[in-house]
Length: 162
Image (tube, rainbow, N blue to C red; front, side, top):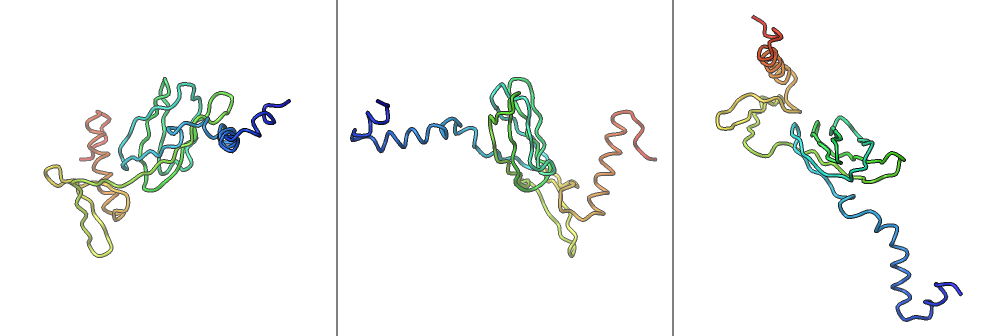
């Protein structure tokens, strides 16, 4: 006689049946379906199972994910929006599938509009130019150019122009 026939007449049969049907869903823990929030241009460290071998990112323009030893993962916000990451083991089995939300900076940022053009400033404590997605192209390019020149000079590559 099968186990199902034995418990069919039992008063708790409906609950047992639901538990049996939900067992495959319980294989994924709550942490495997959590959402990860990160600020654009910032990084966050999260923990995944140690046996993760491959990570796939839905849209790498929104977030970059780097796998570190021991299942540690660095999630970096690249652009505004939502994407996901899927963690696989060496056999291709899905270990985790998480949503990634990338949001804009929320503190000490001043936005100046000049007509339709936008400029961003980081005010910590003095306001300085900051390249932020959505700024006017001329402003954005000028800030990145200055930053590149400064980094080149600091690194000794001679990137600074006279």
